Image (cartoon, rainbow, N blue to C red; front, top):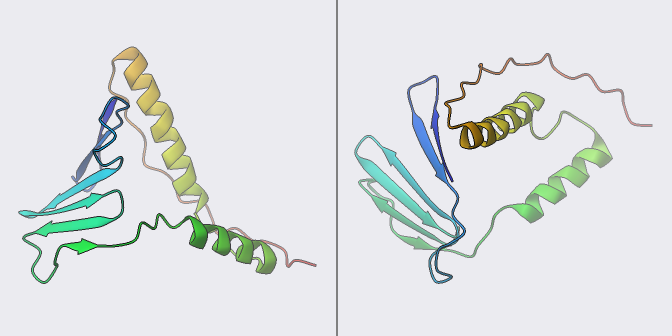
Length: 127
């Protein structure tokens, strides 16, 4: 499945999900192109850069941020505060997912309205 996204600022993205690739090929492969430059991330373990001065090829331990995300969530539950991910972002991602499914099923382009920013959430102090 492939989804093409166009953003209000003119940038675009293509998201592809495939199940039929070989196991030896990186499960997650991200390419970023900007102003004649390119970055490639493979399985969150390797970064390659072309045209980005001062950025060398890097190899790193895979870190998708799950531990840090859980730790931040638990800290927020314990101490209170604003949501870690604003509701408008969660809503936008959910609507985009539904639009991708509809587009695939019906073979149509689905436009999403810009997300409105909700007022700041006021939370009572935790007892």
